Length: 471
Image (cartoon, rainbow, N blue to C red):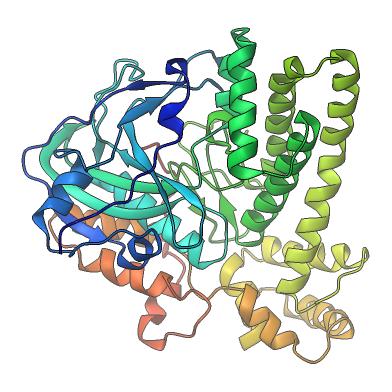
């Protein structure tokens, strides 16, 4: 069967100022590491996994019929400082497909060579960040989190140079779109209000077809982002680089650079090697997403005929967002305790369990999972305090609470030390840990006795204290 990707490219029909047409740079010896066949089928992609054309297309060596490669333009606040021009510096949007579910999605290559937005970078990615994003994004999907997906990972047969020579790779990423807060910021900050209006119209048509005003768009995006961050936190996930250029209008998690899942619970946990001030720490994520949405609001103001009135209306929307996050957080964490219909006072019950985990350096994932499968008290050092707390929890639960907890408290997450071990093996040419980890993480809520070792927190010698961007 000949490879067929049913491209239908709407973003490429926008004005030229939205992007630069750019082709991926071919590599010497592309070879497929992984191809996400179930996702490909959902996207209507046809063809055999062993077709050599597949690796060639997904490495950027061959242009697929119907593709229209481009690098998107955007700006963004990075660690609070505004960069007026960013853009895809090592990524190429090949085009879009409309899946079997009727949803339009982008297909993008990452690590596919330099573009006009590369800012002196080489446009390449090494194998580690490619496999990290593949594993973590697919794990997030299996956990039920809105996220970009990984369609493929390809070795390039070439080395890239960071601190040392490393094997190169290309990731194929799928997203409902790559429209970011920073995409709105670039046109708003430059006073290109016609383009800003075009972007608004396009975004509404693609993601929110029932929205009738910029205020309503802001409200809807805030709601999605509030729910997303609460979902992250319920899993102990730390994004690591919540810049406005990594914040999508679709409400999907994007950019798995210095991300990680916590082992021992500590609200001030930071993994990103460049986040020295803790701006994007675990507990700071709700505040950051509100700040990011305020930047979106600022970018949308020029679209409003009454800009003073818009500022007042947008301010109300932004000020309402912390309550949205608290409500979503309460429902997520209450379910983790087996409480199907939370009440306001349950926030204290949740906070007390988190405090027990924190004081006892308990593992976040295993601690919550043990509430359903037991014995949870073994996860903590202050067992007397846990017994008192557990009596309070049981007063708030009823029939079906164990099943509820099993459905929201994963047994398996992509633990940082396992990711690093998987990458180390792959660098040496052994992809078996990658495939094993991917298979286990596809069923995160299932008991998998044969993979019990992947549930174990890191030994002191295995702790990975910092993660890095993939540039």
